[in-house]
Length: 537
Image (cartoon, rainbow, N blue to C red; front, side):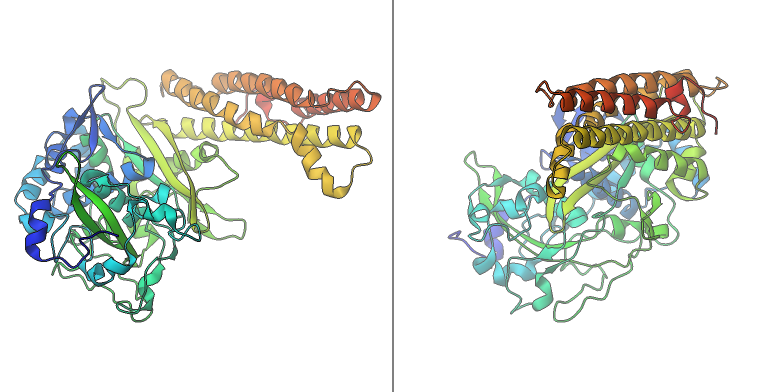
């Protein structure tokens, strides 16, 4: 436990004042292939000289972009209509007015360690800090586990100070993506509900960010016309900013966002960070406390302009979600379908863009990011980047849909081959052993990772052919099918090598599996490309 617990007098904070507007290392950016550190003001002022932001995880990068968007909205730097949005993209509208606005904000609003209004945090947690704070592992989603992981909590007590910039970005990620669960603190003082962690606004769904060729273009692509006031930035839980903050004595009443600035900077957690001096004199965070945050009443159609809607097996329509059994690239056609069909929102605006004379290949990317979790335990970030060129949404939808169907059919055929091989090689196996024997011979676990890069190559080939070609999809799809078929055959034979003993049953199992696979990939129900034909539709 720190010898310097909260609460602290104001004078104790001043040596640790840390302002992300000007402090270094917020965040790392890539400039012409080289890494450099920039402040938030510099990021916005030089956004069109920078390629992108680099962070420790895809979710952290999305959270930083969300925060930059919130600043732009709060500064009133956003288009007033879809037509103005397109003009902003085509003219490269400068974002320096947002930097000027940020530069003019009061210093106290941007102090990460302010005694009463710490940036992005709640000083109301100070009374519990001495008893309940932990090491910084609790702050980083990938390290926190389920916030109470391990019965002895030793992983949360380990001293691992974070530089202030890293702690700031980790805090933004918690606000956006924090998992539901139980906070590691008592609710006796603030109320029992402070221990009930709700899922963050972006948790449980795929967030799609349109990427441009520079950071500035990326921000302009994802800014949008507000259907009302743009709202204020959430700078602190206790700042008198007009927001009606929740209390924790009873059930929460979800709050409707008061504009996009409020939405994109929402405080999904109560957080308090403790400052310390690092070995080189730099400011670090050595202990943290996390409690429940705000709960927003989200209207997915209004507040999630990037959402791609899909229907669950139970018939529920909701934004596309991370799946433990289905790779994200298999649903790329849903993104292209949204660009092709949506009448409002991000995808309709993307469809309105015009080709420019200097456009070659894909000027934009659809970057999809989600956090895959097992209930309260984070598992892995899932993400993918899908090229987009104006006026090619129909072709890209067709290619991505056919590519996904081809891969799924081949995977299904590999599964069928594994089943017949197991049944032939082990005719007397018990029902309890069947799943394990089939898994030994199932090539899908090798096939799926091998199919991903050819899928991306298929999309690139379609874009390279361009919208002027009458049919830029069929030939690339046939070549893609041939490559995947060769890959599937190789993996099937490799898995069948598990039947290494020379016996009549094993030889017959191999022969039956190979024959069934070949029959399936040439059957009339097989995708046309596997038969060397052109698919239509």
